[in-house]
Image 1: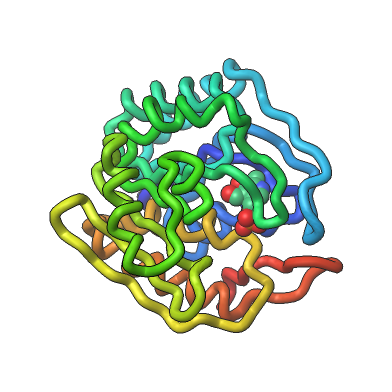
Image 2 (image 1 turned 90 degrees about the vertical axis):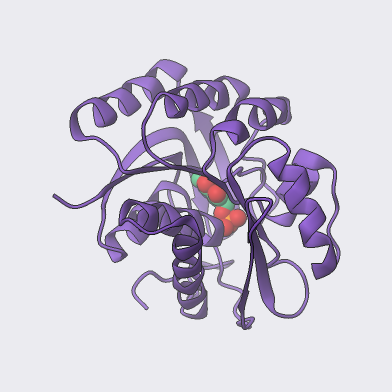
Length: 257
Ligand code: PLP
């Protein structure tokens, strides 16, 4: 039986991010991908035209169906939309015996909100504490902790601020800084600096979803957190290099590289 990985996230109708990016990543990495849909977005390369969250009961029922029968070796969370969904998903994860990769999705690259402002406190106090690995980008770090990172030297301070909420590990994604794409993975004692050359490619839709799903997939395959994050960074770097134009805006990363 292949390792099974569950994504709890929003649907991107354009197929570039969200559930669709997660399942493509899982297929590419050789695990069985499963999905709990939290919200449906009408979305394309130009942005998010509409978003509708599912009732908490629909999310709970999907999760229970999957976990009670099929079982999971890792869970990944993405867009959770509201405080109610964040709290429900945090409760479900804490009752599941599998590592959880939490991508604390706040706003899309186009600036469309994917999480209600009223849900931030639930992310801090309920979701981050149940994360094995949290993967915030610099905007999400600022939203969650108030720490604003403008240089590589400040990544450690950002990591400490996120770790204070209780995730076992954090990956601070420094991809929005100028220069090399550098991320810091730490549990507060070990530090791993992950570097990749910057690809001059604007078609990066789905990058964050892809990284978090690749980490979850590698954890399910039996790798340690540092091994899983290193392998996931390599995967997403390849996918960004191969990102392609689609529609009139920002195209997706490519999972067939
Ligand atoms: N849409 C959904 C459903 C998502 O989950 C995400 C990110 O997590 C996005 C859109 C945003 O993707 P990006 O910021 O890579 O364009």
